[in-house]
Image (cartoon, rainbow, N blue to C red; front, side):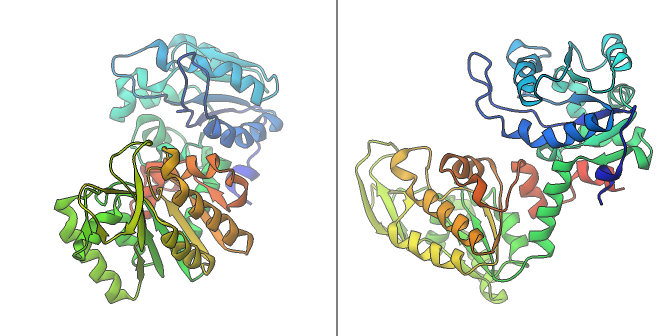
Amino acid sequence: MSKFSSYNFKGQRALIRVDFNVPLNDKFEITDDTRIKATIPTIRKILNDGGSVILMSHLGRPKDGPTEKYSLKHLVVHLRKLLQGATILFAKDCIGEEAEQMAKDLQPGEILLLENLRFHKEEEQGNKDFAQKLAKLGDVYVNDAFGTAHRAHASTAIIADFFPADKKMFGLLMENEVASAEKVLHGSQKPFTAIIGGAKVSDKILIIENLLEKATDIIIGGGMAYTFEKAQGGNIGNSLCEEDKIETAKELLAKAEAKGVCIHLPSDSLIANKFSNDAETSTAPSNNIPNGWMGLDIGENACEQFHNVIMHSKTILWNGPMGVFEMEKFQHGTKSVAEAVAESTQKGAFSLVGGGDSVSAINQFGFAGKVSYISTGGGAMLEYFEGKTLPGIAAIQS
């Protein structure tokens, strides 16, 4: 049993770092509550034990202190709905006398939501005094914010210093995130396929390098595929290409060959004469795209090619789309990969999907319930798979 599950929170004030950095529309309504929903089991367990909960989070990137746009007060009504009428109080600041008094007066079963941590620049600076002021509010520290685990901020890493070892722990979400990532990185059944997409090679160099030690197959899609095509001497027309990364792409291909890892580039592409949903489209081999045209999605043959690789996999990691899936015309490739990942999972593969765009795609196309695990942390997951130590995790494990 995990440390969190076996801990009895009766009479304790649990200070939880959550990741409530959710998108809001111009009426301050939440447009995607995935991150909030993911922390509900952690909150419920503490309340059911007879403890009280103090929630702290950031929202957006406020530049100059408190702003209406980034206030966490906009989340209170939705939080009440998700927690079925639980008493939720709101503190107008995350530190100071009022927050301290409200935390002190908190009764078992009650929740206190603190105002945006990033209204204080000390949060991102990892300021020790600020972390200590936050630590005063609770008896136990619970980190359930995997999405910010790669940041050495006051509330994610520094604050843990102010709690004894038995009073700091991961929440259920964080435990699941770490366990799923560990399963893929260190306990993966072969064949292990990593599907890496997105626009830029530069964003994914480290993850590809680290995965060359683990994966049997690496599928490369999205804009970054064309840098690899050009590195092999292909004609890519006006497709996206990072000229300064062509040598890097050559090195990665050579390393993969030396290690016996199969790199799969899309055999064909859906090409367009401009970057627009109303562009003229055609198909071409990915290494022979005519001038004036650009690849904006993988083609039908590539969909089938990737489907076959995915269906033979026992472990699947997916990070990044296959094309410009935000435009309807160029979403077929990403959708077909989502279908293949779901189908392979039904057949017994373990699949982990992470990174903002892949998660959006899997939700958008209705496959969220058909994969093994969806990570809530984009940057954090990427850094974990790059082999880096995440400060938010190290602070609890040390």
